[in-house]
Image (cartoon, rainbow, N blue to C red):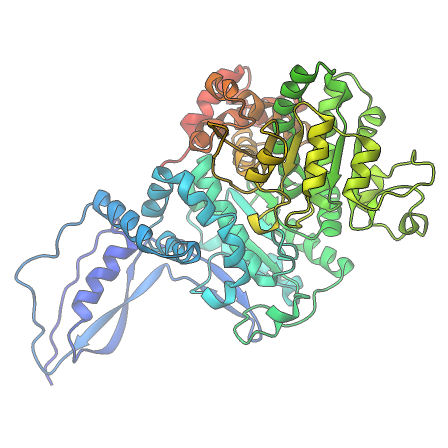
Length: 600
């Protein structure tokens, strides 16, 4: 047997795709066999994954094996080199391929593969096609990807920790940190217990953490090498997923809040020690845990909860614009607006608390501002005389908005509450498709010249009201913002653009601003500042068209403006450490944020 040596030359700047292409060409000879292994360096970010039952540590290799070949025949070499493929050609090829894929999920899967193999290519196409691709890499498509996470799984994408390793978390994170070239700047952490409006998806929540970080890079300019998605596997109560033979997470019921809190305490302490400059974002924890963890860690760590604080910020920004337009149409003072919420989860309560700042800006006290809100959960309007409230069985986070002024009367439905309150604004975070009935919407239009209606539940399959129905049932007078994207609609000869109150407009700026400020923690004032900055980011043309939010194609500029507002407030709150940004006005800070953004 004759051994034929070969030499394979690779540059450190070569993409993973090019390296694999070169190796495939060499290894294509039909009779080649592996007889030994060496290593070459390939620039892939290390990724650690934890899985049971073997509790093994997996990492995506920094070094990939090189094969020494043996053949009974000489290895045939091409007389001409491989064709030179430019980055621009790769980008065009990717765009063309995406157009030929028939479903959003297939596009999502393919883009995930590209991101792992060539981040520059992935974020280049995101840069060029952000408006079209944001719904593919995040909501609504990411919801389906999370539901089918174990079926479409093709390798670890971040840090997977399970409850059985609670005592080993410091060891695991320090081992992980020692392997990194670039320390993490942003961690997005979930336990998969309440993914969008889809419920408990267990380890499938990793898709949300990955998707969110894609938007941090594409929309906020965070360096992709500083992004770390994390899923904390504490079991799942979703029996369908748990019994799936392909499910890769812990096949046990979800642990209770007390045990989950012990696990979170260990994780937050270890993560803050291992990654001392990183911002930690909590994502899609179930309501009670979300509020408990936010209260527990907000004053201690550099963290925020996007479902509670990010959602509150983006809706406050939209409400600032909508309330001004509605008051101009009706002549009513801004302080007289009344808001009904359909939904009593963590997002709804968080949004309502953040929106209270609007009324306090008009001179109301905190107690007076709270009286401008009525919250409806699955049992109806939350009142002091309702049975679960009297018995003390109501979730703790709902207690803040209990109504004491209903004189013992109960209002079990949205329609009955609208008749009782006669609100100017209706906000939906119920995750119930079509929950804003035609009767309710038409009644809002009868009560208001410009009714404010925000159906915010994600994904679209959980949204309370479609934009087309909102236009028809209000005769086009609605001030509309949804959580998921809707296309523009022709209405009576005019093309109407819906507002989208997507957290994408604020969370990249919150995280990026906190990083640039080097803040010790993320204050409530910084969250409110992000909302005000977003409302001020509207261009004159956008205001003239009656838009409530800036257009998504301007997300980089918008994120820079939001980040600047966050930095300014961090300075005023005394939690910043970056002295070089002190003394700059908001315009100069915005320019500094633009300069600091990463570009592919």
